[in-house]
Image 1 (cartoon, rainbow, N blue to C red):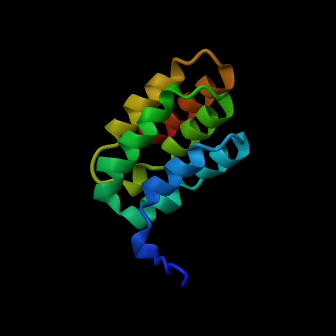
Image 2 (image 1 turned 135 degrees about the horizontal axis):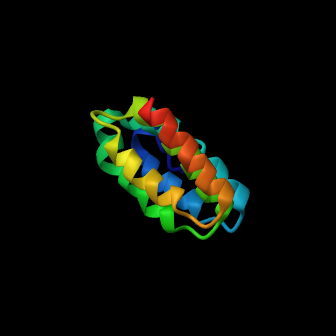
Image 3 (image 1 turned 90 degrees about the horizontal axis):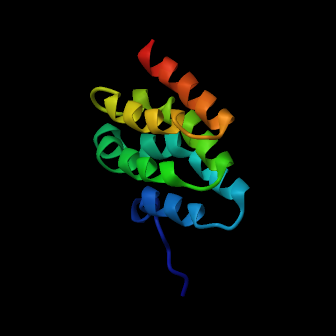
Length: 116
């Protein structure tokens, strides 16, 4: 017998965590680029209380491609959360202080989007 898993049984953050454990960088980057879909499924409150802090924990990731994608997507999440985007700004400020220029530049670009 096959185990029938419904969409309601899948925790979007757990799925994201599994994809981020991959050895393949492109899988991790693609997973980060799906966070807006995950935020839509989770709703504004859960996105703010669970997804954003999880994404914030990735700021110390060691792959620049993943950090670049993270900086890009954090700038896109303000419409998916309840309340002020200040939680996003905190993580983007950390990314803006990174050594890698492209990560830093994308974080600054995302900060500009949030503050306009």
